[in-house]
Length: 411
Picture 1 (cartoon, rainbow, N blue to C red):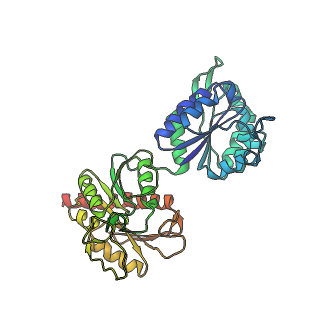
Picture 2 (cartoon, one colour):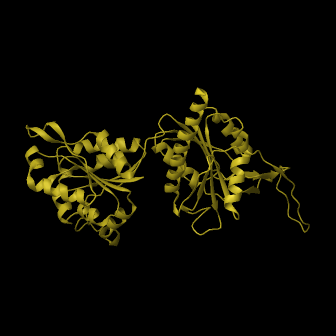
Picture 3 (cartoon, helix red, strand yellow):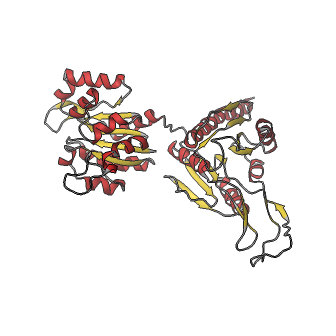
């Protein structure tokens, strides 16, 4: 997820550098926006080095710099559209007043008005400024608009006074951010094994058989599981995707490679989500040299590959196993058959011919078929949102299945 971190002009601005590092450790991508006052306390170069991204300091390029163009003039709109959350820490009394009154006189205030993403502010200031009626009125106005305010802590302040005004701790800010984004930590202690992408079954050194898969759905599951606290092992076929933060990735090529990689890691997993589009068949013979084209028809003999889902589910024990079903007809019927035949706990099924679903899209339309008889049809959602809903169902099933196991053990 993408976080835009607004840093305003207070002594606590230096703490924002530590916050950037912590956000990155939690798997967030961070872009920093600094006000003019913030630059009096800490240099933009510090945040650029930590975040690895451009630090935005002005609404427009500096006059006379020769860099002014349309892109710089509307950059606040681009940032507003791509951010998942705007976090302002520290938030001065001045920025709170501007947010509350709708004043847009720099990049950060303009960004606040332009974005529809959730907003979290962590105020830091003198105790009397915090307690002032005007500040409290602005705080209440922001809360009424849905802004999440992380109240400052009490203690010794830079001005020498004691009272409320210290920037809240990192854990408090991160907790507020997760709550606002609905990011859960309900998979801590779990090891989630995920497969993603296609497999390639070689016919000769040039040609191969494969499936249409970008890997986006599996990678979304891996990223979501990591953010929810799990240790994530990602076995990936050939894709052009970056490894999600906090995920350990193992690259494979063929169905046999994927089977061996999954089998080797399944014993250490507590949850397996097999989202890869594994080839069901491979050429019975792999030619060492390129097959030359001629006028005659070419017949290729195919043989079955190992059914990874069925193979690992035979000895799953208390593990939760999730399979996927890409269908073109009778989706519910075929998904239920697969659920029973493969001894899975959950099947994520979709009609890949539906608009906005299936391969290569950033969205998906799926139905979740659970082993306890529950069918959950989801509307068209981003694959990131689908991943969260899949994991929600995994967590629910974990409670149901483990609860039944506990009942049997006491019977």
